[in-house]
Length: 136
Image: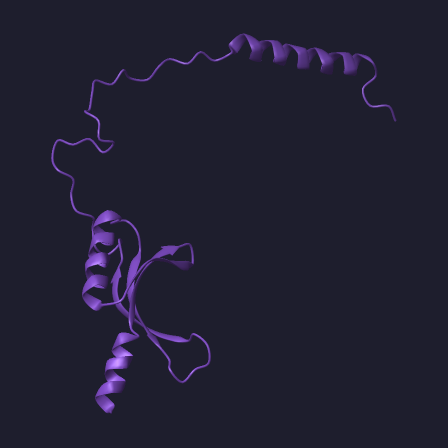
């Protein structure tokens, strides 16, 4: 009888791959067995090496009312701890061939506009002062 309970409990285990989104975890995939969950977790890490990923085991609580699960962390991928695999040599980060760069394009500043605005402001201040400035 004890073996039957253990087998039933193992069958209720689910392996879930989750990805960190802000301060929450978003479920990516759910698997029924440990081998499938571990393989999918490894594939997810290869597909998104800069993401925080975790593989957890969910075990249904048979004594609880409704769907209540206890979870256990099986594996965690922290991109700050494990550096992503290096890129093949000679490959540009964007996937295109590195070409000759043109350099910085000269950008013309609107100097005439700046001078005109300064002179208009100075003329307004001069008119204001000639008109009496602040009236007390």
